[in-house]
Length: 225
Image (cartoon, rainbow, N blue to C red):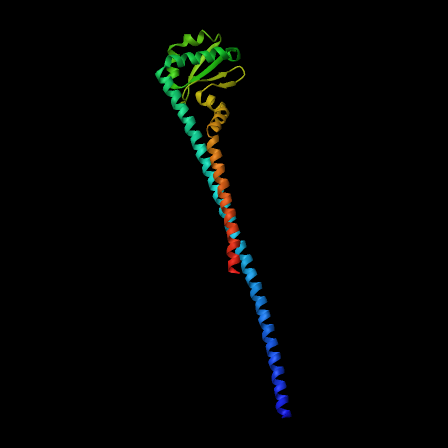
């Protein structure tokens, strides 16, 4: 009976130790599982947020690039359209255009009318006209004037060179448009102000959407836990 009781006590002791060991193993396993779960959660959250941030940055950059590209294209088209409009006006009313050129000469003669010679460069059509009507220029300019035909065609206007100081004045249509590009851009921006505001609102909504997706993943991870 003594040996039986002793064996029973030893079995109970072994069972207690075994249960303790099992509890300890379970605790450690639970800790490892929790640690692993937390690491997985952190890693998933980090990867997911990075993906959303990269997607947001990339998408907003593409939107802004597309807006800038479209705006620049519209600006180029606007300048091209203005140039075509001016060409049509010159073609349809050439006499008024000639009067316009002579008025410019009248306005700047105090700057360019210097000895010994002034060289005025026209496009081919205007060169032909003024070569045949030199008297119109001579009524305005007192010093010697030499006419020159440009090697490169331009819409209209002229380039004047004062040989005394080798000073050049560019009064071509293209150069006048270039000089007034700032005014054109300001008015262009006013026209598209509402459009740009709509695009900004769209960007804000897109940012809010991404933020909502970031919050949604937290709820998902709570369900995962």
